[in-house]
Figure 1 (tube, rainbow, N blue to C red):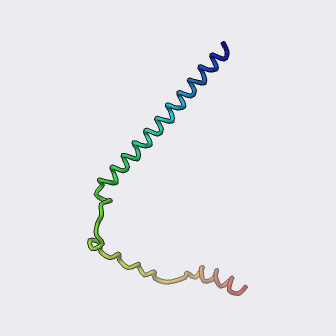
Figure 2: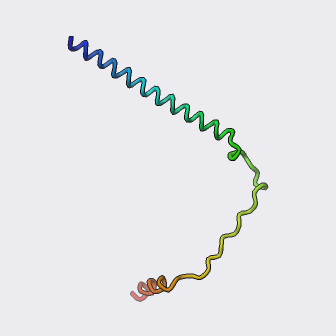
Length: 80
């Protein structure tokens, strides 16, 4: 009798595990299909030729240089 109960529980655990893994796989495949559909039809991911974009603006010039505190910090290492 005990081995029959053990066999039933083994079958139940295996079936539940199989079901949970199958549901995770199914939802993962649905997520991938949804993402593929989004990237396939989203206008912001469409191909655009290089001529349609303007050149990026040049980087801003950084005024100044080191602050007085930074100069003093580096000077302490320069003397050692």
